[in-house]
Length: 424
Image (cartoon, rainbow, N blue to C red; front, side, top):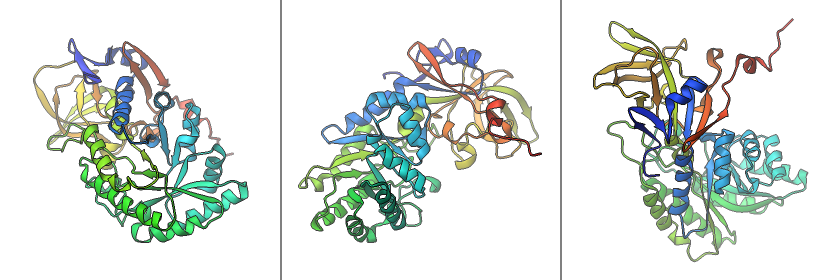
């Protein structure tokens, strides 16, 4: 894709070839809008970067689990990284092959394990000894063999936000590296487990290749040790986590896909003497994040004694990241404005001081009724959305060239109350 997915034409912000104002007029606001070309282009960039290595790109479903998004990636041949039976259900409803699914997460229930075994997933990424024992027992009761990989915590600092760092000793994820070899031996002796792989994931929004390379090097050493123990590994899962540009001044740019691919291949070099091992990668944010924007409308402007507020119809229930992580999202008026700017807090209607989408942001002076596009919102926007304050969740739209389609209708109040009953 030679041009950005979101760009101005004749002073009107477009997604590909469709004006965002056209979508807002027909669908309303707030609405998530995604570029199909950006999503498929990002997936293919990973695929190309890993050319020459037997690999499977397992999209991290938690980044954006809408059926319309998943179906596009299924058509591209992607696998999936899931963390719940609900995500497995979504993947299958989108036409995804469960044989391309890895199931991660520290708290898989027995019901979820049964569902994944029945579906025939590629592997469970096991995160504790008790989980290992449980999977063996559930598989034995079902009369099947469960394919497993052990998620190893390599104690590598991802140098990212502490809430999304997952590879340090103090994090809840994975099995400590210094006991992993013994746990592999134990797993190999369990009758209803098939030890297939090794896995790690050190965190999200990484802007350097060095942490990836360091973690992979530690995995490779363990794989060689396991080979000496007679335990053959045929899957090595290095997680995801490649960052994206959120448009904040001073932030380091993320590595290119080419730089990432070169670093991964170099780090895997110690395994060349072993039987073939398939590489699994789990990108999420970097596939869908830059491809999405949240379109919202200005409700009111409110000058205060020390602050100016721009109140919009999107809120923290629609896009939680600024409130939860203190994150920065780029913002652009849908209709290009003059050069005059204003320092303002962009806030929503929710009855919380923490309901903000930007603080002290320099924006073109916006008028009541103007449309504002909140960028880099394709990942962890809709999947983290809620109905706080009994607010229906936003609609979602995918644009493909000159055509566009609603992939999720805007919720109604009837949807919100559908499962509830008065007490009498």
